[in-house]
Amino acid sequence: MLLLQFARCDFLQANLNPGRKDWQLKMEKKTYIQDLKQGQQIADIFVITTARLAQAKNGPYWQLSFQDKTGQIEARIWSPLSQNFPDLKPESFVFVRGVVQLYNETLQINVEQMEILELEQVDLTQFVPVSKTPPEELYARLIQLLKQELSFPAWKTLARNIFSDPEIKKALVNAPGGKSIHHAYVGGLLEHTLSVCKICLAICDLYPELDREILVLAAALHDLGKAFEIGNGLCREYTDPGKLLGHIFLGMEILDPHLKKLKDAHPELILHLKHIIISHHGELEFGSPKRPKTHEAFVLHYADNLDAKMNTIDQALETQEDNDNCPYWSDYNRSLSRYVYRPMRTPKEDRTPKNKDKRKNKCLLPLKA
Image (cartoon, rainbow, N blue to C red; front, side):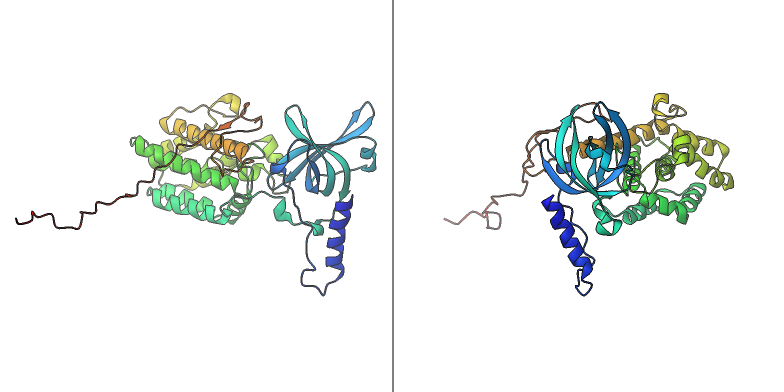
């Protein structure tokens, strides 16, 4: 409780004296979810992403999920403390004192004390994960890549019309690549899209018979619906259209009016573009309306899956600092259904010549006797 009192005291003193230059000082977050360890005592700020009141033998308890910019963690408030909170809502900020415990091979926080905070008391940038590259820059890179790769007039027109739409741009710049599994941060969708485009282009270099332009365009558009599938709130909840239709259908709804306006694209080309996009999940059980049936559709599916898996592994291993090249096992990853391992890396040899031939600049003509 003492830490909470000090934090509140600092905040109140800063805000009650508007003559100070730092009167807008926010409460400082010191511990992030990615750094939490079993048995650790915590006293810090989190945002509630889900809240459900359940019943146990000894009384009602709260099942919560907390979030900061590094991830999410489950939490529990047991009775009788739970009865101090008749209503808890997602996107509420709270100061929590508790202990980190391991339950079913997953860390969770057992809350011992909690206080609800005002929005003005927190720095929002500490709670919303953002891509390392600014989303606006990622968007500009995607536009530039399409300008370089597209020469067919219909595909150039389609790309220009889609990516110049202010509403689409705003949604893409703020969108995560997913809710929790891969690229689950602001800018994640653009980061994923750009990577998938680059993977497809690299594969086209290996298999030059592929239709390079339709493939890179499909890669740029394949997850367009995700920008409207997940909401922009802190909790990143699925929208009603996202829950009822899914991002593949939403993406096609956005594309369809633009495709109908294309005058210089054969219907067969448009049909193929649609197929590549709607089959990118690969299998029916993974939410794909159709399975891939062309070279390009297979390539996009595997490129999409590869980038998603690489990012998921990165996130699983991110909690361990990569500073000593030591082997490391991650915690159990539910989406991959396994632990993942970071092995020792092969040493990079220094190929800079160390001992230059001292005779290099000397005259090598034979000396006269």
